Length: 527
Picture 1 (cartoon, rainbow, N blue to C red):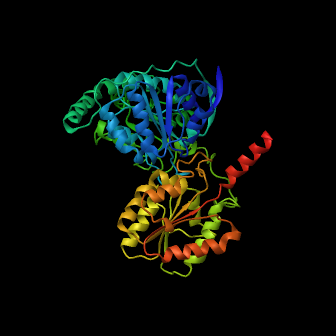
Picture 2: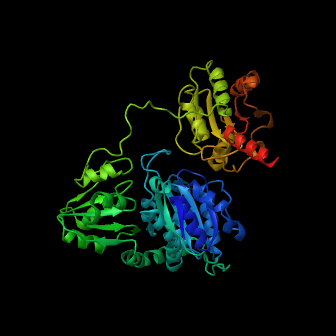
Picture 3: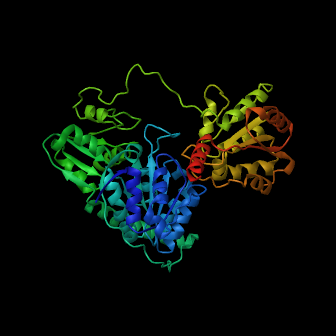
């Protein structure tokens, strides 16, 4: 049977049909739709597959590892920057090993469509010394779930599955298979205790598995050779394979790479019959650098580092065709003479009233700085508000405000969203409380994870209790409703808390205008 699926949906359905018992994730574009698909799928509901959102990527990784310990198959999903958050647990999971199959889905975002950077998650797989799968199309994304779970259980290691935005958010027909049963509960019998004496032995066992991983890659159906005439050999990684085939058809003289470690012997064989190799990969020059080392300095290896492909940004059929000497004009170039439409906060959004109040109050403090965070409210950095001085990573607003206050900056204000606060802002607030830092923290609570489409927020209805539990003084935890009619009250409270020499938390709370509209529509349909 065939289904028309997004790449993300193919991953999700492939996982369900491969006997998945739990998906653990924090929403982040372009990975969000995987968990949402599982949450809504009838078989997942029937089987009771775990699919609630986690507080952050680290808790997701650890919970998935716990399910694997119990012998069941688990999937953990995140966008590429989430790999930074879960890195401690992820890298150590390679040393503990796994029992039930464990796949770590990393959705990379070349060109930074919705991200702070365009880091490449294949580095993490190499860093942790575990295999990585990189589908070239939606069918492979589906098939690789069963393949990856089997490989994970055979090797006793987690598997990274890397997708990119263009694959995650495009559709294709996918041939689906009958679902497999879940694995039975069968907890691991060996200790997963990384005391140094045990960890050294387990790390040596991981090193000893490297030959098996290389052999699995060499034998993989996803790493294939296509022979044709020509002096230039091509290494086409993941989604790049499609662009190469579009440009060259059957004339491509290539090795398709969709499983790592690299299939060294296939690459060497291609190099031996060609004068040069062109590496085409979406993301950073991971393979290009590895192949330079594999073949030696004297062998010409081209790619992003040599300028044959753009150093940054995602691949397109145009820039791949140009690198292959087949350029026919900028077919996929943006349309000309269209006015730019910069992103902006929704009309009616509570964040707008928060920024209006902040700007009004802080106009009296010429030396003020507002440290921002990751969420829709980051758009407060743009016109018409232009309120933010920084936005670096999840949770950085509070700790950066604290550091600036430590340096003597006043007033030092942090603004952070509800979901981001529970993701990684709470520990920064505890530091500030312990230091009695002179900062004002605004937790702009719209009762959801708004930027990624309205998923549940882990701290909803708990923020006052959390702040009190972390030690913020009760009289300096203030709740307001961000509406224009309440502006006098909001500005008065902001002024009072900025003038307080210590940690203040102000919680403007009003439901996201988008989820409010959906909830109102659902209520109307039910009535």
